[in-house]
Length: 259
Image (cartoon, rainbow, N blue to C red; front, side, top):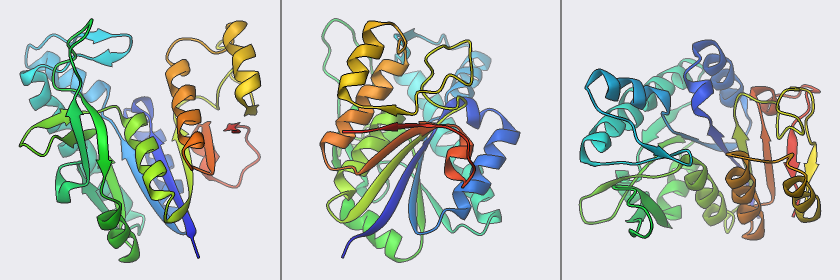
């Protein structure tokens, strides 16, 4: 019989706010049952790169990752950010283990092909090592994945954290009842970006088309929502978007995606 598994992706703006991060990790640690955390590093990598004299190149919200930028990302994502999160979870009595996709061959990827744009050392997920992840979960360990994968030929790759979370949830759905949570600074998907309380509580395929048509869902929220439906279509049972209160039993609103 399948047991429940929560996969939670935490956004960069929460990571950069010590108070919000602490509150999030407290709630995450208190989640009952098996759970997995996925994070990026966002501004931390940008700030360190600037201190080292590296120019940050972004296209449509995606980072161009050259060789020097990859070094910075590795230091921030797999190093400082990941271990800081793990240490705080340990303080909350959550036995976390920090991982990149290269560790124990957890997540392999292929370097994104060069088409109109060369993203550099950016990877698209190919495989998720569900067997080893399940072993960790059965040992009551909580995996904490940073947004890095590898190509099985010795190359680390920067990989979108939203995508990693979705792919883990999809692959683990064979063995668990999986729920996927995208946790960021907003209360959910908003009808009006100027109104924090204009949360769209439910979105299905039909209403998504309407919200895209009338401009309610725009910009970076479009790929995030598309990623949610991608997961639902492939076996994930529940997908939600909201802020840290989404993980509590409060009455705060958040967005649930329905297949």
